[in-house]
Each structure stands twice: as C-alpha cells, then as structure tokens.
Length: 313
Image (cartoon, rainbow, N blue to C red; front, side, top):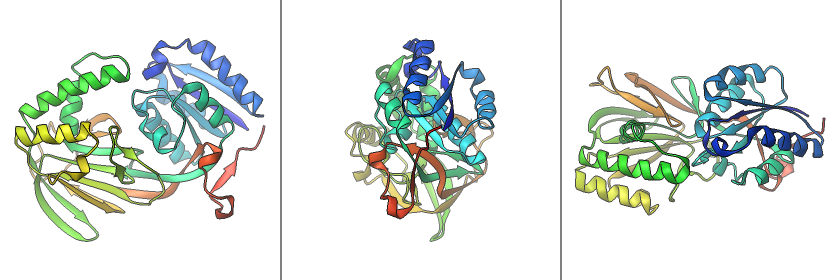
C-alpha cells in the first residue's frame, strides 16, 4: 500500500519534535509493515494545499497534527473517497480518542501501519464536513477569548481555557434560535448550542465513544446567570455536564438551526475553528461515509464486512 503522510509541524506535539527524524522513523515503521510512505512535513499555512495534492497521489492519506489539522484532512479524504489515517499530535486528540487510537505517537505509528480500514460517520454543516462538533454561543465566545491568550501544549491550552471560561462566566451569551428536527420545531432562548458527530460521552474531555451510531448529538444550554454558568463549568471539569438540568440532550439524524436575530459579527465554531455564522445552518449525519484506519483490535468482526486489513505494497 502506498501512503502519503502530511505532518503539520505547527500542530501541537510536533512543535517540539525533530520532524525530519520523526518522518524518517515513520517511513521505517510503514516499510516494516509492507507499505511505502511518502512523508511530507509542512507548516500550517501550507497544510491545505499539500492535503489537496496528496489525495491524488495516495491510496491512504496519513495526517499528523492537532484536531484542526485532522478535521481538514478528514474533509479532503471524505470528498475524495479515500481512507484517512491519523497520528494524534494535538492537545486534545478528540477524533483519535473516538477511533481508539493510542495517544503516544510511536505507538500510534505502529497501530496505524498495522491497522485496518473501517467506515465511520462524518457530519456536515451547510455542506461543510466536520468530525467533532459545530457550536454557537458559549463555545465560540470561549474560543475567541482563548485566542487572545498565549499557551503551549495541552496543559497550557487547559489553563488558557480556564481563564477564558472565567471571562465567559462574567458575561454569559444569550440568543434566540429555532431548532427543527424530524420531531418538530422548537423556539428557544439559549446560551449555547452544540451539535456533535455522534453523541458525546461524559468525561473530562468530551468526545464520542464511537463513530458508528448514525446520529448527531444535540446539546442546548438554557439561558444562564453567571452563577449557574459557573456551576455548569465546574460540572464540565468534573465530567458530569450531562446531569445538569440546564443542558437539553437530544439525538437526531439531521437538524436545522435558524437565528432570527443574528448579527453580522456572529460566529460559530466548527472543529475548533471560528467561522462566520449563517442565518440558517442545516446539519446532517452521513453514516459510514468516511473510511479510516483503526487498530486491528478495535475493528468490527470480519463477518460483518465493515473492516479491511491494509494490503502490503
């Protein structure tokens, strides 16, 4: 199997790694498993052009970086219909956690090189693919504040997020939204809405336990006072946010959200990236539409026809 690997040297863990040495090691690991690897180390500004070049030259697209890097690669792989392999090199590694990948880079290299192809779900927001979540309200405000702070690594990001959360608590967002699912239309005042690719599990780092349920997770936060938002933030820290009465938890295959009083400066977050908020956002789950490489032990039973072992080059 011929694999092209695109490694974002500006992403997470890679900022402190000798990337030339890592790329050479990755080539050796894949060769030991019967594959050829073309390893390409790029800067963040060159990531998208390199991903677009790589998909026309490979049987499997391997990407290394944080969740934003992985999301960009997943969108390209999804559109081109080729398998995606992931090396977790970010602070949170949400998608890698859902795929049950080892979070240690060297161990992940071995797991991916010896892995199997499996179909998982991907979601879209107005046609734009996402692998983790789309959010409005609390999350975008948190990201905006956090981006004004400097941090390095996962711990630094957590500290910056805590400082940004304090700013959000002092001035919680509040807006109106119309939420339509196959069950009907709801008009709500809310502090935040998040739509996830598969329902999220509770925990200190919320992520989908699996990516094959064929459902979106829909989380609507009721309007909050600073005191209640502080309680909710503490519940998130403890990994118990789903138990809060202020969080409305639903599931659906598709949902449309309209914002009747949207301002021109309103923003949303999609897989960690701030984007302009459109007046209406249509979100859908696409069951099994993305092929990914997972460790052999986590693939479904071969009799189900859902997993394929990577063929040697």
